[in-house]
Length: 285
Image 1 (tube, one colour):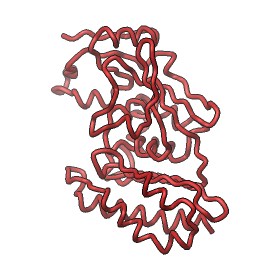
Image 2 (cartoon, one colour):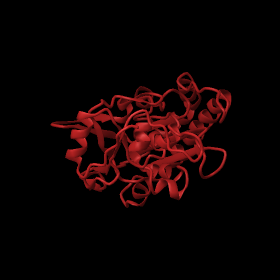
Image 3 (cartoon, helix red, strand yellow):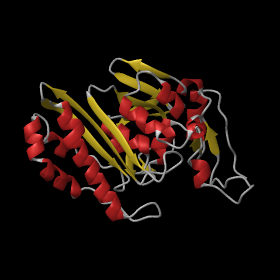
């Protein structure tokens, strides 16, 4: 039997995290599946749980300057309902599971699960989001792209908790999120695609492209994006196949029970091509 704790404050939670080897548990929608046992029995957690979903310090969402600060206890439904949530993130969140799950699951938990198929993670990569990590006496902020290091792996240390997610508010005037799954709700992604772009005077001023479930982490290349900055519509249209070829070398999906690697790669490249020829080019007219 492992011990579990339900702290009343963040300060208490951080102290417990420092004193004991515990699994932070907010909504638990991923952890309960990961550690599920026989039907009708309790899950088999390898160590005690630290229940943090009710901590008042982690529940809020607020706009602060040009950023959105999302508490680690805020649910996916909270994120979707907040009026200043960027459209690409709202669309990604609303593609996850069904309302009952979104009412419990948290954005921070989706990030910490660190699945390359995590739909919110794909959008957060495109938004240059960061996570706030706290331990007793100190705090650090880490970009999501550096926080996640591989499937199920993060830089979170044993005495730290994710306390907030920081999302830069979109300056983009073009944004999309696309998810390919077997059905509309309660389906894990075969792949996902997030894109945001800022077009000024018919010229690309900024762009971010992210692909989920086609590599060990979400795929995004700032270097390839830089090649598009300053380009006009005609330049993008004449270089679409070159851009697609560049991304083709980065998109390396695997075969699994949900889809084949060949299908994932082809659809990912099709989504990229469609975005460049339709949404992006159309917004540059």
